[in-house]
Length: 209
Image (cartoon, rainbow, N blue to C red):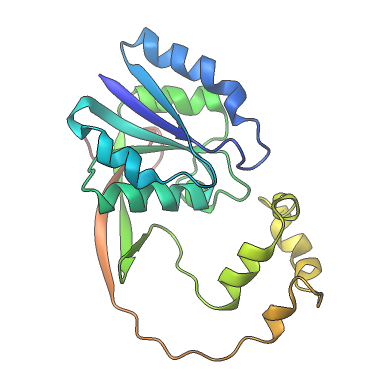
């Protein structure tokens, strides 16, 4: 049985790719064939999920931050791929992974995904886009897109609040934060259930397969 591993080599501190061999070895010992897929700028994930036969795969593993997770899930659901997901928190903040108290140890989290424990997470939809833990609009989106990735890396985890005010000081880069016009929008949200991997030792009971 195959496992699809989608990783973003530019996420977070850019070191996840150094763990690929150990991850593949762990799954291979258990009889799984890991298919790594390198995701980055200019790569259309829709093409990937249009090519694969989901019946050949046991699950999809995602290594990256919240942005990578969001793009993978949108491509999966848009193409009717209904497979469990597992997350390697390899991004800057990893907000969604922190909600599940996922460890950042690659060895420990790989063992979790090998053990086949699952729970469910809600997914929202606004217009034709899905979201898993946050939906933003206006200056928040603009600020995130304009901020240099090296700067964002310094705000990861507990340091985010500490440095927030430095980020929003008026400057040529971030002046749009203070000049956004008002928008009137109507949001219609539909909720979906999506299965994700989770350690059975966590306090919330895993429902499963």
